[in-house]
Length: 198
Image (cartoon, rainbow, N blue to C red; front, side, top):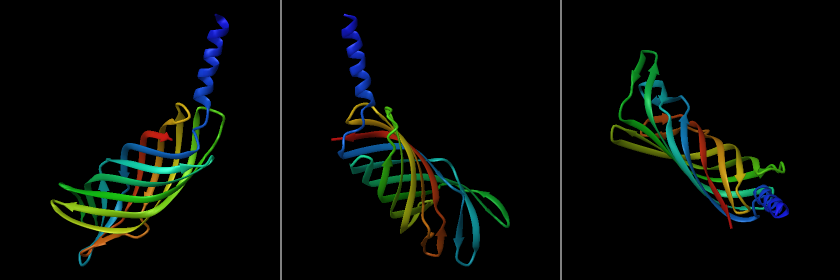
């Protein structure tokens, strides 16, 4: 009886410490999006610094794992309300204004095998960012090149399913610009979700 219990325990440990299966996978995650303070320039009026409330976002992805490398396509949605504008004349509270960013990224990730149910990983991505400013019902958008740096860890429930937690710094080297308004964009995003390997 004791041998049976011990064997069952060993099999359970083995199942939780095994690496995720190689092959195609899909994932989904959601969390908080922190848009960094950034400049807003209005042609003819000058430049002010925008501050944002903590926002939210989600990502969905599909990729292929080759142990230890993964390559994936990721679609992301992020939204945050603008809180204040600060300039030479002082600081003003902003209402009914937000920024929404849709991202279309190709990511390369490296899983670090530490012989544990937890697998840390690092990665980077490039792609397109579509930024939309909604200023009291008036919407303008622009699409620019974007990039992101990724740090994360996955808890391998079994060879197919992992719980995933990541930090993603996302930025646009060029400002979103439309109708004489230019907006600087960088954000820090903390996402938690699931990844399923087929």
